[in-house]
Amino acid sequence: MARDELLKTRWEAIVSLLSNRFADGETLDLDAIIYLIGLQELGQLHRKFKKDEKVNLMHIAICRLLEPYGYYEFEYFDEEGWPHYKVLEQLPPLKAGEQSVLMKEAIVLYFLEKEVID
Image 1: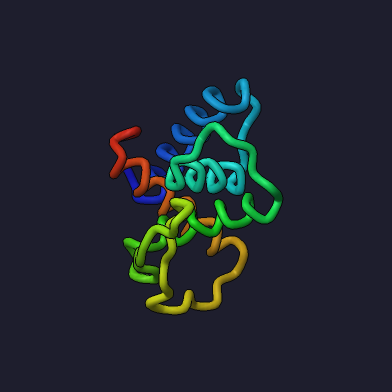
Image 2: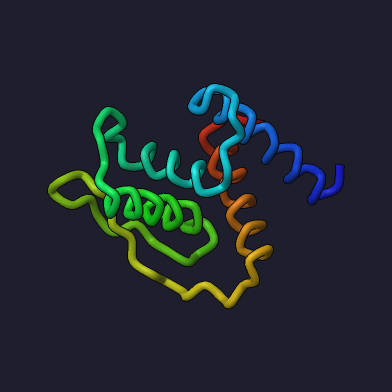
């Protein structure tokens, strides 16, 4: 299977799995999946988050997802349990489609590492 086809197949498996588990089958978009990864990384699953905290959850997810690519490095957990990352390298300027592909690749890698998909 070609690399792009494999990515597409794995991405669709992740979307299906998460949509069925967290959205009663309604299809989750990329941002919703990033948010869920942020929740997973924070580990505080059973609490309500304010709007700014939701943005921070997405930031956590993006840092974690792009860490294997060398853009971020985990630094520490603060006193409230929130992970903090430092920037190692600035992301190159990417078009919207390129950003989307990078994030989908990173999410697929994340779920492969967590052994949720194969």
